[in-house]
Amino acid sequence: MPSKKFFKAEQAPLMWDVTGLIAGVDEAGRGPLAGPVVAAAVILDDMNPIAGLADSKKLTATRREKLFDEIRAKALCCSIAEASVEEIDQLNILQATLLAMRRAVMGLRLKPSKVLVDGNQLPRLDVLAEAIVKGDSKIPAISAASILAKVHRDRWCAQYHDAFPVYGFDAHKGYGTAQHLAALREHGACPQHRKTFRPVTDVLAAWG
Image (cartoon, rainbow, N blue to C red; front, side):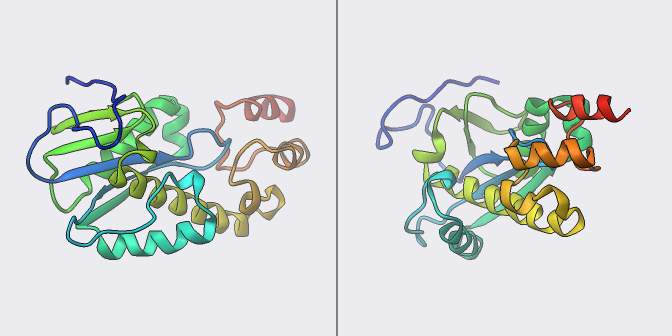
């Protein structure tokens, strides 16, 4: 499938512009040591704009939560999908991320004419797609997708914290903070730790 990186200014026309619905796609959770990787796909409604869309990492948690509800209410359609820890360990994190993205696009109620994906890699799709570097700060639909994916994964971490509070998932969201690493060494790995990610592999080896 042809693809090109997008380096033009936001107001510039996208390559291979097509008529019809445009979906934005982004992911959350590639870097953490635990939990699924999450992807979202969003088709915005031009007649029902959403103010304040931006890269989810540049927004406060409170602002992301508010935008999450607004996106769900105002978008023409949206979809959130995951690739599990087992799939991450089996496929590797890149392929699992692309799988989650594909699932998100396939989960859309409406089929887009074109899909814009944050980054420089494309999932396997049956529609025209384009990878856009830093798309989450350039394209509103990708920004919306980044917010949905981030909030969904943060909520997953908060829920999983209730089951395994010793790891502090509600605070570090699965990333390899000093608190998380100390808990790993003290308690070993839990079922949602990614076994192919260091230092989880080192902890598993130490615990036998």
